[in-house]
Image (cartoon, rainbow, N blue to C red; front, side, top):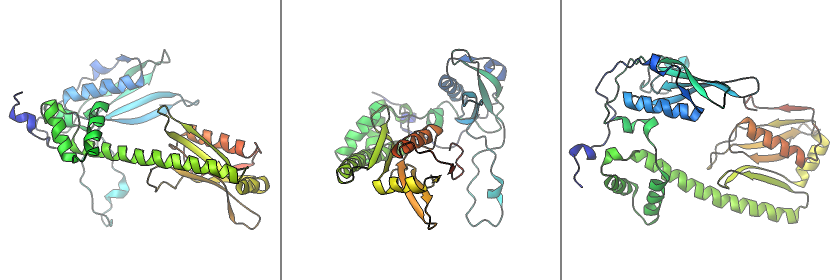
Amino acid sequence: MDHTASDNVKPIEECHEVHIVDESNRLVGQLLSSRDLAWDFYKGFARIHGFSTRRGTTRCDMEGNMKKQEFFCSKEVFRVSKVNIIDRERAHTPVTRMVYKAKVVVTSTNTNDQWVVSKSSQKHNHALCTPAMTPFMCSNRAMSKVDFDEATILKDIGVGTSQVMNYLMQQEGGYHNVRFIHKDLYNALERGKANEIFNGDVDALISYFDYKKHDDPKFFMTYSVDESWALYNLIWSDSTSRSYYTCFGDVIAFDTTYKDNLYGRPIMPIVGVNHHHSIIMFATSIIADETSQSFEWVLKNFLEAMMNKSLISIITDGDRAM
């Protein structure tokens, strides 16, 4: 297969053409069947016109149902004032975003989960990319499972990441036909390696807890899995901790600040204070994320471990989802 010279040219950061994109009237009123399709719709619009997008603010009603979502041009930002101080110790990073309001707002119609574009502003004050460069913008890049599996096989037999990228580039017929860059490939392979380590360590941890149950009949452990049967949430408590709760469980504290670990999962100890004013451990949990659903799962199973003994108050670390 013959390729033009541009097929093997790697993407650069600079964009050369400046356009004024103001098609707000055409966008407003567009009806989409889901919020994800609304996101895909705006990404497609951005790709055609030479800019990248990112998700913005969401708004929920009193019951927690999503009602509004903003999608921005990726260069839209308001820099936090504290980073602009003159005598800061760390060097100032280059400003790659600009203060302006290029965005769309989609709103739920309460009809079969449909969403409508309720507001749009598409006046950009920066250079927009040429069609040849848009595939390399962040919101337009994606690695398929087929490419990831093929790259993983090549890495397993000792092929370097750069060589893997060159192979995929030649297979697709040029750099511009691959929907990701070298950095995306490297990150995906590293995440895959971390998942393999995590899954192996999870199996060892569950086996250890099963062994603990024989040594400590009152040892409590339960966990949940996601759609791919990977560990999602986990909580455990031994007989000593459970007996502590019986005596000192009127007030408990959750702390989700322990994230500095190999797996990037929040580790959440559940603690209290005894009659000597010493901190005691009631249980420990590993959660998938800091969402209200994860915290609800932890609290429900924690109370089950403690024989549903009610408590008086809970102290948190200020986490909004908590």
